[in-house]
Image 1 (tube, rainbow, N blue to C red):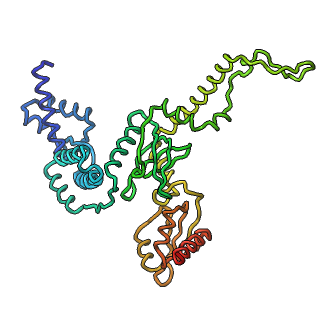
Image 2: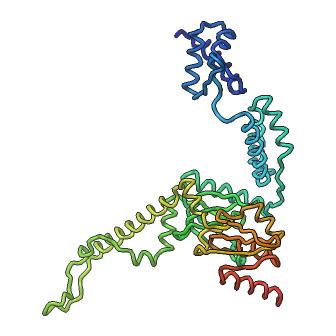
Image 3: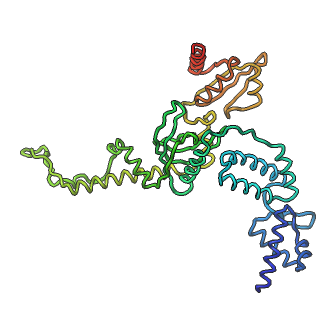
Length: 393
């Protein structure tokens, strides 16, 4: 194909793509009439675009048409509106920072990329969809800094993180070494999911006071310094006999001498043992940094109530609630295992299968005095102790 013909084909493709992206169905006749090309050339143009962009095809009677693949215009409008409105939460975090300007510009570009009829639909849906947001942390600048550091550790090859964390239980700060895996948004707060001391844990991002991303080698060196007890118990397969010049003390008659150790060989053996332990740590860290599938993530939270996961054994819970909470629990499923049973007088028996955590305990306490704990006895006793403590306190 000549340069002139190539240019003409590129110009046609560019304009056809504009039609498709605007939601228009394009036929061979449309291309032939608009550009004055013969039927075979128009068909070839569309077939090429179909192959490259995986266009969808259909028929209107006997006439074949091509269209942009994907969801319907209505779904695109609602989905885009929801995404942009949810993106407003990110703007709350990054407001008055360069990140906020970038997110705002990105949202603006996304709106303008829609067809005109979709933009109007988006405007209407956007007016009807609003989130109430009043959760911002006191130290927003620090949160933004920590967020950038954590993202860097997750996405840019620095898998380890050394950080100081303010514990919510007592307000004291503690140093942690952890392998961050992902950020989780839950009820107006950002949580860092990470492996710490071989356990998957969650840290409130606003509670991280300072953090340092570490390369894998440096992170393993820090872990090695922390896990000296594990190193002492580490079983190394190297040949220890090579460090002895003379064994001594074999128990044979006349062999009362102390073993003689070659200091150079002993250092070589110790270094090989340390390298083997660090290699095991590196393998552990690399495994912990791998993101699992969405199904694995769902399984992680299967028995969790809210953000708490692996907070204890799974238990059978039964509650009996009064009319106002019965209405709420008929309307909303607060956990995947929830089962409702209607009782007389508008009351409701609710069953759960979950790990009882502080968040679930607070949820049940919030239903007082319209709740009775039927199972387990331990939760009943816990609530009794909490109420008695409030009354005496």
